[in-house]
Image (cartoon, rainbow, N blue to C red; front, side, top):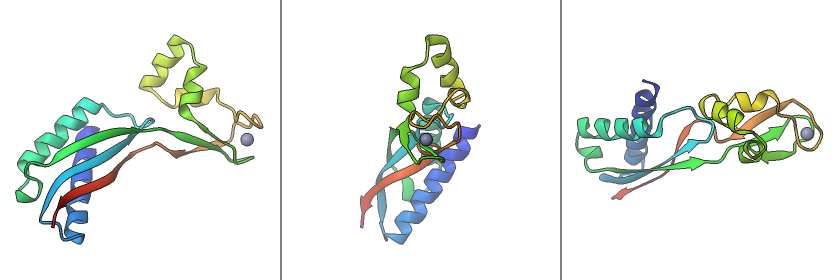
Length: 137
Ligand SMILES: [Zn+2]
């Protein structure tokens, strides 16, 4: 049910942003889902559609576009940055499968490619965010 809560909060944010920009109608909401956000894209898309239907005029006929945002990691020791796809390339099939369901698995054996420090943070590609909103003034 996590997807529904996220969909609802995205739409609430979009409506608030549209009000701020004095948009009469929202046409399209472009949403980014981080590579490391564990959500079912199909359920999320369905939830968005259902909530849009239940809403009033503001969201009537709104289209949503969903993009996947690449995840970036940064070493806390040497500040080197690398991407989650680099880690994935080095995994075998079983590991890749596990990572698909539990992204954190990828980090258990992950070290900074530069200084080998296990101390890093995910700087991008976690969570759901709005990239842009288009509409009519
Ligand atoms: Zn490092």
